[in-house]
Image (cartoon, rainbow, N blue to C red):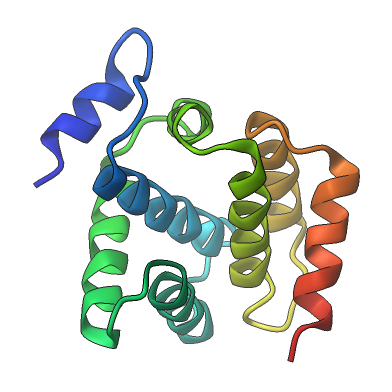
Length: 146
């Protein structure tokens, strides 16, 4: 299903991703954040589905299918650095703030700030070229949202 994406991620230099692979990679990254604290809570799964549906104008079934592809990809994907580099090379900087907001929304979905999630998010923001300040502002926007 995503053998080309995995080849790209595992190659010597990750290459920019096509649109569908960008979507899968973001879904996989959100799953990685959700699983980073050792729990994959139903609230996190539901939040991932809502984010994917809203971000890509998908119906609930398509968003769920994309999340499931992200779960599979997350299990098979290489280290977080290569995974994130492929997204960075494919997504304009302005949209990467939205990626960080999506990741914060998933990390905070279960109502707890976990040290593992915080640490991973800080690393991801850096790898995506987003400053700590911009990441903190993204988190604050997510926390303030209804």
